[in-house]
Image (tube, rainbow, N blue to C red; front, side, top):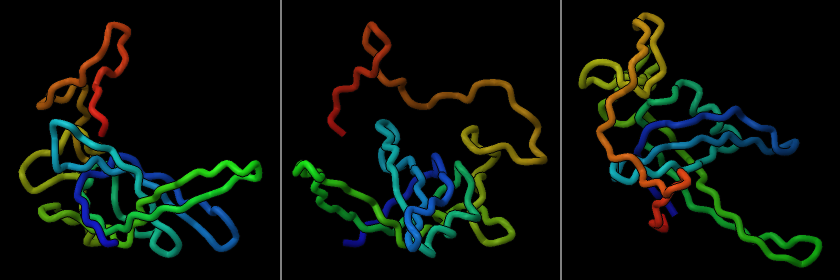
Length: 152
């Protein structure tokens, strides 16, 4: 099943050697299709595809082609569990990203100055003010816990 998604890189993990013949690299993308209810989703690259993230940084806008995968696992005690994974086939810079010298997406878009959520550039002056919020904060209960009861 081929699925596409776009968003910005939220977290990039190191490549892990899971077994002698299997490597994987996980990363998190904040999907940008609904800014009022952002979704942060864990994806994975496997094998030779792990290097596709090497030219990207947190904050870069990306487009993904991936497959939804699932499997069943039975414990030695007979308990059955189900696992899902989002296996990425291709990562590329989203349309409108400025390209670096390797042709990969840079953390700054063509629309203007650097975004607040992007890592600082070497030549950028340091910023110590808080970024402006253009979304509403998530609701909290009286104990400070997330009170959002939406199931997604």
